[in-house]
Amino acid sequence: MRQEKINLEPNSVNSTTELMLGQRMLNKVPEVTIFFWIIKVLCTTVGETASDFLNVNLGFGLSGTAIIAGILLAIVLFFQLRTKKYLPAIYWLAVVLISIFGTLVTDIMTDSIGVPLEVSTIGFTIALMITFGIWYASEKTLSMHSIDTTKREVFYWLAILFTFALGTASGDLMAETLGLGYLVTGLIVVAIVVAISIAWKLGLDSVLGFWIVYIMTRPLGASLGDYLTQPPKYSGLGLGATLTTAIFLTAILFTVVFLSIKKLDRTMNKSSIPKIQKYKYRYSTLIQTMAVITVLALAAGTGYYFRHAQLVSSTATSTTTVTAADAVGDYDSFIKIEQDALQFVNAGDFASASASGDDLEYTWDQAAAKLRANDSEKWDTVDQTIDDVLRQLRAVNPDSASCVSALETSITAMK
Image (cartoon, rainbow, N blue to C red; front, side, top):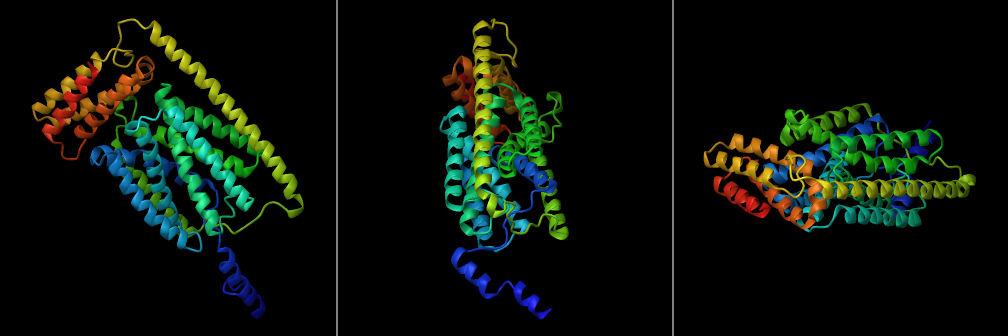
């Protein structure tokens, strides 16, 4: 009994040597169970709604919100990297913050800098592949079961950041630029996740499958957030960004507390590959990775080409009779909505003005793909003014003068 205790003692000579030389520790990430994916989807939804709440409702703007989220993320990651084992509260708080920050990185590139979503999607894909390449070259594994050194954990969190940024860019590309909407985008994502799950059952490498699904859950969470926040007349539940964020943060908190008590997400360091089979395994994984990337790239490229061609064709053949949801090159419908909002603001009825903002956002999102295809430069300009209008109308304490200025600027930009 005494000898067994000595062998398992974490402060033994061997363990101390490992800590000094390789910073080796217990696995720093949770076991990939159903609870993992539940919290992951909750976090991705919070990343969407919380960034909207801070940016629009509290009026911090994209840059201000990104600075706040970035500082908090740096603090939490500092403590996460200093721990020697998996601590649910710190780990999932880091995921929530990196979800918000990753979302904002893409939004700033798109809305503030003007980088097309096509470019950011490709760029983040390349950045993620480079991260994985350097990680694998250095550690010979990308497994989530062996995040047991500081170096591996740094690679892990960098990859997580790029997955959120990529998920945001690709999801917005499908939902907004290509005009598929978040419902259709969500269904496409679910189909991909199901296909990957089936492929895993048939022998797809679990690590490869994990990272693909991790990326895909970001647009899935955004679709869920969009459904919860949209008004009922637009087929949503009308909870708004504030309430949705509060509900999901509470759900994350209770789930993390439950896991902390039950310890159902604990995992020991493990290697599922016998040493004698490692060469064969790595070759098989390389072939699988190349095959999956090729299939996804071909499917994405083909889908983008035909959908973009469809939008261009639709724009060219559109008649002059359009509605707000189908407007192509005609901004009169949106001007009318903003003029109504302006009248409400001048009358001091900010509740009705905010409701007009909801109408403006929904109809603008519905028409965005065709408007952008018709005149991308004008669309970019108007889109930024509409963001400012929504920020002012939805502020916790809206200012009349600021609302009037934002609305008049936006109306002028549309003419």
